[in-house]
Length: 406
Ligand SMILES: [Zn+2]
Image (cartoon, rainbow, N blue to C red; front, side):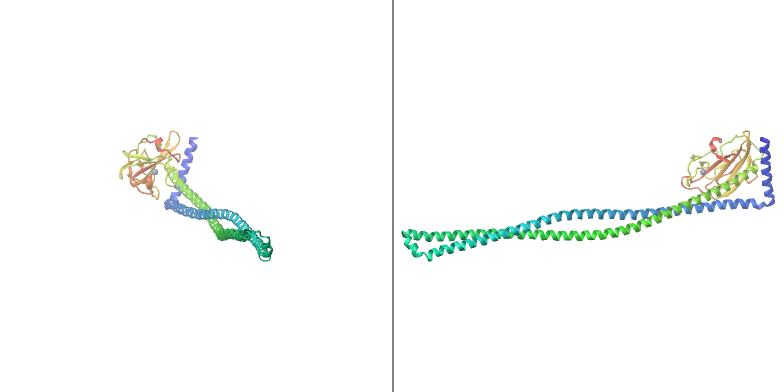
């Protein structure tokens, strides 16, 4: 088992060396290209995320429009309901007023007939009395037993006349009152009819407005659907960009690991006797596995320390990477070889102000390899001067603090 591993490692080394011999610049060019790929993919992903945010904003705006129009539609519907209720009320009031008007007219007509009848009766009676008085005066005179009777008859005539007159006056008075009532009922009915017409006009206007709002709603809803479709498309683009970034990072990572493997020869034995790469630091600001500004898991442990603080090799090994990276900044990777557990170990030190070792150089535990800086992507809560420390066990990133004293 172990022999096989050694043979495989030897073969890998041979292949790597062969590749190096065939084209000395090829490896460097490949690495630069891989880093460039990651950088391009990162930029494309950032842009896609920005576009996604903008598109989300467009969707929110469209949704706001739809909601606003819906609010207006609800308001108009409320007014329509109110107008409808008012129309119902006015309709009932108008019917009652019209009925009252008809009643008043009928009453007036009846009173008028009563007056006419009374007038006719009075005229007839007065005529009969007059006849009796004039034509029958001789008979009356002969029948009257005394002057008192004659005078009395004259008085009775006067009284009857007065009585009829006052009865007619009273009827006229009553008719006049009824006419006033009729007029009042007619006025009320006419006012209610006017109010009804105004409400009907309002109802027509609201119906028109409702139609316009319905059209506006349809347009806004279509816009919203279109913006949502664009958002969906942009989400897919962003996911694709993320995938591309992950792939580019994986390729770079595979490259770094293969570089590492070049120096993970059986001749280097890893004692697992690590030391803290800093003599002093102010605090551990981010743990391994915490979330970074891009929503990925944090690959290492961040030690906040003053700029220029010396960084030491955590253990004996060979420098497998010493370069500048858009994200890591100036960084160094050390292969520590294979431990007794059969696993390979490597450490990585990022964001250095500068490094003082070169690829292939053998370093010993505690040797200065560079200095704390803030190069590469250091911002947000990852900002400021700090050492980003990574540990790879068999090429897999592992929590450094599980092995390295701190
Ligand atoms: Zn970090």
